[in-house]
Image (cartoon, rainbow over all chains, first blue to last red; front, side):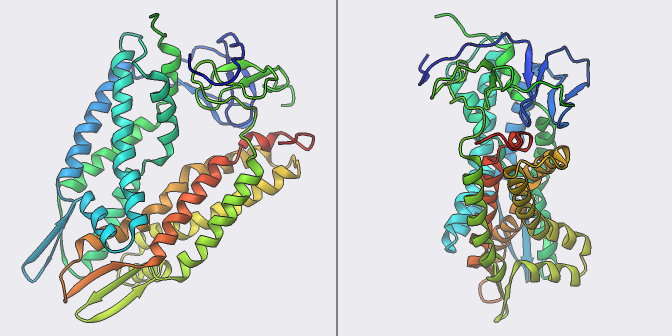
Length: 211
Length: 207
């Protein structure tokens, strides 16, 4: 293993440690829909995973298809005196770059495009192998990366942002919401469904392949 | 309550990245045997890093509110909007519901973050046992709502890309939006570097 530093001993896998206050609990099997909470700080320790690996893979593939649609189709069209202008996410990003707000362009490109697509591709990759209980090549790196980029995807904020932009623009122009904004709406629902799944349980249900 | 054992008392350490439970062996740079991330009992230098990021975010937050974030040009009429005047415009022009959403995301949430993180830092550093459970919940709330502040930044980006009718109408981003975007990013980092375990550590614990 290419880990740096000393390797401490692994404790028997019968314990949970609360991430928020370090309280130790004995693990137990959760019934359907059950959520284990910390008695000290009330944070969630673990959830029952109603959805299997195959279900999650299906959800990721769906999210990917919707994500492509959300990015290819225009989000809104504005009309003024017969002139029409529509835009996509990348239209916004390139326009912010040209209008001297490169910082904003980079933030938007990362949080609305690169991180979400990266998250879906990496998750799809590990789930593909996890169906057979195996760890995908590069499993360790992928899982750590997924943990790091987790909080930095903001597609759902963008959905609300486009609604606000539509209302603001509607004060002065004819506004036609396009398919892109609906695709984003669906994406938002899929992301919410994902939010309740802790992908870290993939560590427990997969095993290292002996080479 | 006090009978619940904590990881430190049992000689255990949980990996912050993959949640593997390991035995705490006092080696200086131990790594998680499962995911390879460095193992530590608490996030390193949590107090000083969170303070530094929070203060930095505050300095960005002032120009973010004072400077205009967006310029609207319509038929030669130039109008610069700050975050607050954008909210007022929404309210006056007949969308009070959306005005409340934008007000919450762009003003209430950042201010709440500054106060909440400041409160958590000060109370934890003093080893206070006051309302620990509620403080834990406050931290989780800050983590959960933090990124919604990006709302206004995306609104400006969309309007800039859309409203490009040359002389008749145009929307341009102004420097305020850059400062605001950076404020949100830095406060997110600040809440990530704060270790909620410190709320429960009490006076005798030194980070």
